[in-house]
Length: 311
Length: 324
Ligand SMILES: Nc1ncnc2c1ncn2[C@@H]1O[C@H](COP(=O)(O)OP(=O)(O)OP(=O)(O)O)[C@@H](O)[C@H]1O
Ligand SMILES: [Mg+2]
Image (cartoon, rainbow over all chains, first blue to last red; front, top):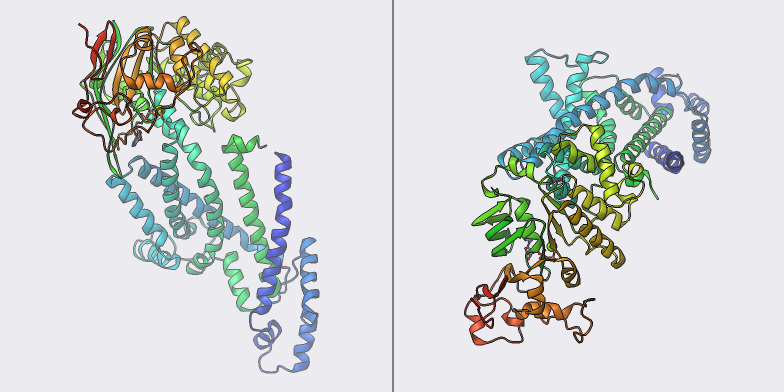
């Protein structure tokens, strides 16, 4: 088991290199010059070529691209993601400051997705072909096909402006988390419900399920002990992927609900060409995403003894 | 007294291609501590019959009808689903063909065994664990107690089938239905598993309904034989009568098509020509007629009924000389 985890951690290295290369390249390919943007923002009219060149020199933008990339990677390897151009503070501080809010939102969203999607999918599978099944699946399609911003606005309209149950914007409090978490979670709930349904139905045709029935076990025991654990194996992989989607999905949700999260920070810093901040934040998210998926794979091994005692 | 009595069982499946008539009005009975072998080619309806007795056919696609189904003096057709459940695994145990797929891969052997004691015998978790270890011991698995924590993939095929048997006999059932319990195993292991079944039967005095392809096995351990073809019983009787005074050309062909250790001088093996009929389109006459060497015009007129051709011996063939 320990060797497995170590092996998996080693596999992360090339992936992270690739991610760093892609963010770096994409940022440089986007039109716009951070030095120019900064000058026009901060000092108004007087932009002289000398001033511009001085600033670019200061920001390391005059060095060859390869050297810039190397600096970025070498720094990152030592845990130094550089300083934000816009805020003039270390990137890592900004990220850690904002990440809590984003992580909280993604976790709450995932929790809701599981809490809603699992029962929905299992009930649908148990009532396959009946009207309850159709109802559950219709709900799941509606849930997963609504655009995030639209669903967010709808929830705000109903539960905030009309009913005054929850605040429409801001962060920090539990009440403020509820609407954004539903906005994010309902989407994944729909996807999960369908997957759990099909996974349960597939498992139901397995020989060991027939054995369980031949043993005269209670139907509930057959579904939960014999069926669910097997059905969860593919679902777990999906949950890992969904968590990535949730982390990414926070960008829109944070914008709709004006939450001070990492997603919004990234969007803002892309617009202001804050190279170090964007690179650092994306790399950070990539690490989080990969670690979550590693955790999912470990949970997978817990569910399936054939992997745990892997050859 | 008869332990199991099944009369006029019909099973049809609704499929994409239409209705598949898997079993067409068969009768079957079994006395206490008797061994009945059910033989026939692939697709003849053996498994479907076994599953129908336990009420395990898929409710959505299988249409099951019978004139009577009695077990141990009880009318199974009148039982509720819950009453049937309470009987499955307790009064009737079942062993399945493929031990590789019929055990749950994510639960320990101990769990899969002990849950039976918990559900049917009202045992606590601890007692049920001890019971499970005893069962493993009884089916000849060494270091039973330690192996309770293992998962199915840590056992060999033969050992898994022993576990399957342990599950089936956990509550000392009156009837054990074994659906080709050795087909998926190596030849040497097959003999061991059959040996085990015979031992357990002698010990617990249970009746066994053994579905098998292996006529050598039938000759060795069966008291009575039921030959199925295309969803019908074409010959049945005491093993001795069916083997020595075979009435139905299909049974004879079946006997010629498999090697038998007990009779080395039967001449060369001859596979049955042709293939079994499509259960989607059964003809009006004898369903074996298209493959029969002795076929006559009257064979195509209708399915011949089972006729008595000796004490405790019936065959469904126009050539059979009925006896009183
Ligand atoms: N769930 C099902 N849906 C549709 N058809 C089925 C189903 N189960 C069995 N059948 C059909 O019923 C017929 C009898 O099948 P059955 O499994 O009883 O054969 P068998 O005698 O056990 O054969 P084998 O020796 O291969 O196990 C076959 O034609 C099969 O295709
Ligand atoms: Mg079969």
